[in-house]
Length: 402
Image (cartoon, rainbow, N blue to C red; front, side, top):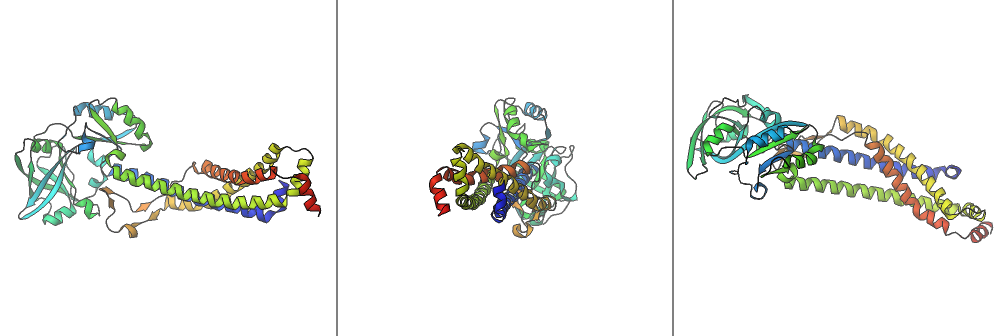
């Protein structure tokens, strides 16, 4: 410990380097974790949920006409899971909406009017009218962009044209009871909701095409996915990563970039501390030579150098926490607004994202900082410690005295 105090400037610079490295890594990790959490939340609240029960083979074919083998059993199994927040059944069908001479292609989504608003935040943005009710017949809720495209208004009747399961054409009049406005034109063009009963009648297909499940704690997804799969034999249980593989790929790329950035920061810290430790070792050759001449073994000498590294690492980690906490706290409470970069359309692959990203601040920062600081300084001290054991006491003492 006295040796660290002899060269306070070098020790201080080493601790500062470790502290800055830890602070940068902490902020980058907190921001990445916050972004990942918000990504999962955005996917779930855009109507996908955290899990989906889908018909066998749906993941490969993505065919809307597929139906679950036992819709009632699937819904019961999903609702019985621990920690489940909402279970929402869906059916989908492609069709055309027409008003006068204006036509728009849509994907009509059949929903449970009681469950959908709990899962899908997009339908909570009703600008005019109301959302669907259980006893609605021939009613539809559409997005504002679709309304503008067809030049219609609340209460107008739209002509829906679709192909039934038997190949016959089906026509129906749907009255607009609600207009949703999310602020994203891309999303608003896709919102077209009717009741499950109406869509079943129009398509001639009975049953549910998919069941979306959202949990209070998204960390449970993988464990509960396996549990649910055991209860719905004949159908498949998919996580949001399997439902949206491109989105999952983006998330993996973000994690890889963040990890690479942290490795680069750690490497810079290690190189800086290694340089300082080597300089200190050269200046302390006589001290080490005397200790070795007095019988200090190589292991104890290595232990001495590593102990000093641990002390500097702990101080650096503490400094890193002190430097990072204010910034992480600010970004965890106020967030960083990316609306200028995202523009008016805040959607990616049909998922509506909030423009403000909040960092993840928690107790995980404590072991993370100390783990990073200690690992960096210990790795940095390995070569200087090994070099110290290679000293020739007689040569080192004679050089000092010369």
